[in-house]
Image 1 (tube, one colour):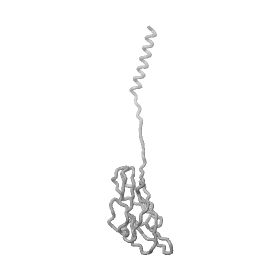
Image 2 (cartoon, rainbow, N blue to C red):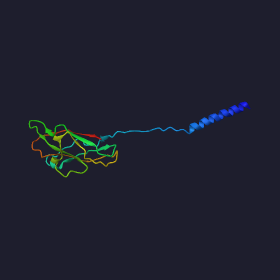
Image 3 (cartoon, helix red, strand yellow):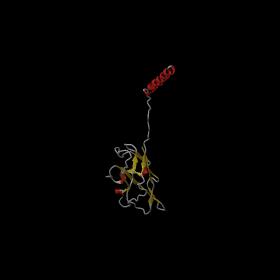
Image 4 (cartoon, rainbow, N blue to C red):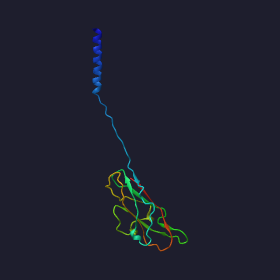
Length: 163
């Protein structure tokens, strides 16, 4: 009988300890973080041929990007030559305008962001697009004036994007 009584007391003690443990809790804080980022998508133009005779209209290009946040990215334009440069004995540098905005331009290329004034940052793109949505703003390039000296004019315009 004595062994049975000791066994019962031991089981009661274990049961009481289990009950006390089950009533306890421990909070665990969970967090995660993702930095804002933007990417230029592969559909962006890599070659735009400017119109030598109707420069004020500009030539549409394709520029697509997306950001992982709602808001406006910062875009930075950099012209390698500060304009379109021809080569040869009659080497000439001509100015051109860069237009990137939510709506098509209503002014001539000479009033747009000028290649000669780059690098320059631009922040006027839509601020209400949902995260991870591809944005295709109106993108145009146009000579400031018609070409008057024969030649092939080239430049490389780089667009960098950052949150």
